[in-house]
Amino acid sequence: MENKDNRLVQKILTLKEKRGAIILAHNYQLGEVQDIADFVGDSLELSQKAARTNAEVIVFCGVHFMAETASILSPDKTVLLPDINAGCPMANMITAEQLRRRKGELPGAAVVCYVNSTAEVKAESEICCTSANALKVVESVDSDEILFVPDQYLGHYVSTKTDKKMILWPGFCPTHIRIKPQDITRLRLEYPQAKVVVHPECKLEVIALADEVLSTSGMCRFAQTTDAKEIIVGTEIGIIHRLRKENPHKRFIAVSEQAVCPNMKLITLEKILWSLDDMTPQVKVPEEICLKAKTAVDRMLEIGRSQ
Ligand code: SF4
Image 1 (cartoon, rainbow, N blue to C red):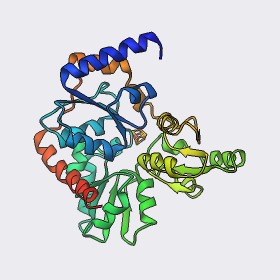
Image 2 (spheres, rainbow, N blue to C red):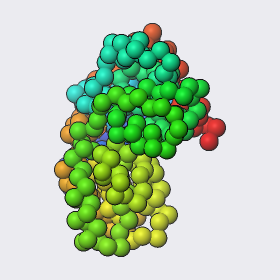
Image 3 (cartoon, rainbow, N blue to C red):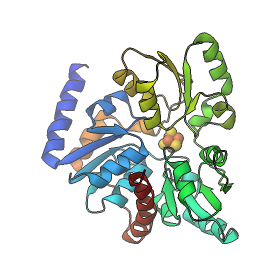
């Protein structure tokens, strides 16, 4: 690391201590951001951390819905999102009003919402899920008809594993749909010994070519336990940093260098420092929405505890 970055990191760590803060980073964050975090993980792990921490301040290095989830679970804490413009286009593909309307058309369906959704949408849902627990959550719901929002691809993947009737909202991740089946076919020829892991936000034709369909935390576990020495990775490329760091003797090949989430990359070391200095931008979910959304998130976490 260059001296400039060293100084920046030192300033962040000093200020973090002074503020009584914890830094949480998603697996898709820039490598240098992951390196200064107290904890790096996927949405489910980060929400569990946010719920359990004693820190007064949570610096959330991820996107807006993740910071909202931290605020929902820890309403008395200050949640900082170092760049307030770090949103998730998929989460913004459904509004609470649109969901209320669809619910009206499907009175018998239970709403399961992917955690990649706004707090207002969570507040309209029965239960949340992440890509790591989506199937378990769907199976746990006391209804045979599920309205799954907003990711059609995760929803479709789950529908292939359950007998429940799944009605899918037509949302998608603009980053994961950049991963193409021909990329996998080409890399399989180039690395014939490699295993292929992809995220369930990928398109169906990509999922069909994978050896494993895993959440980002699932990919990290798989990398450590598989005998394979080469792994082709079909998700946002930020995770490659963590995989290489944790498995220095294995080779990780990104399926597509285009699988970059520009929103995740908005968080930089400089912005983390400014954020801790100014104690802005803060993310706070209004109390009425927070209470309803918390019920949906708590139900999901409860399933995690009973696993
Ligand atoms: S990778 Fe996709 S789902 Fe994740 S934050 Fe970016 S746009 Fe949203």
